[in-house]
Length: 116
Image (cartoon, rainbow, N blue to C red):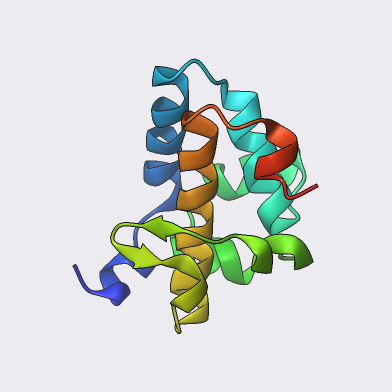
């Protein structure tokens, strides 16, 4: 799958998959929302509005109010790539989100996931 195809994926289609991944491991939708809001700067209503508008990944991140400055501390491997080494800024943000939800699903405490 090319990056362009990933960027054009509807966030409203990906979001339920992120929630399912976390819920399968005993975490909640509200925890997924908290992680997404922490990363992007959306508040809950802003996040819901983006989902309802059916925006693609590219638009979702482009319209994000404020990418969390602590997101540069997200490190590790997701989909076979080290997130800190991804050169494409948009793909890096997408992979940061994947990594955060992965950490949530693996049972990490929220304060560690949010790099507090």
